[in-house]
Image (tube, one colour):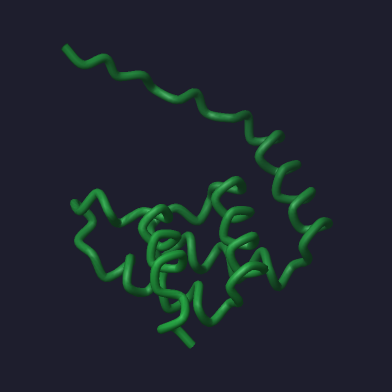
Length: 99
């Protein structure tokens, strides 16, 4: 039988601090871009996800990350591939075909 666990919500003050730390580290423009990308996959409020997008942008460039994420975002919300992991897979396997 499967066991399921509910993730505890982080206290709002901690989430707010994480966002402030990210903004200090990466700048507002990078945060805004990351939030937009995460929002395409319906998860714009996760600072950890935003930081991962920023790291991808630094590695591959915003244009390529945006293109790969657009492919992921077109998948049905029921599709388990509609996740940042699929965006990463596209980038690692096919980044030379993105511009």
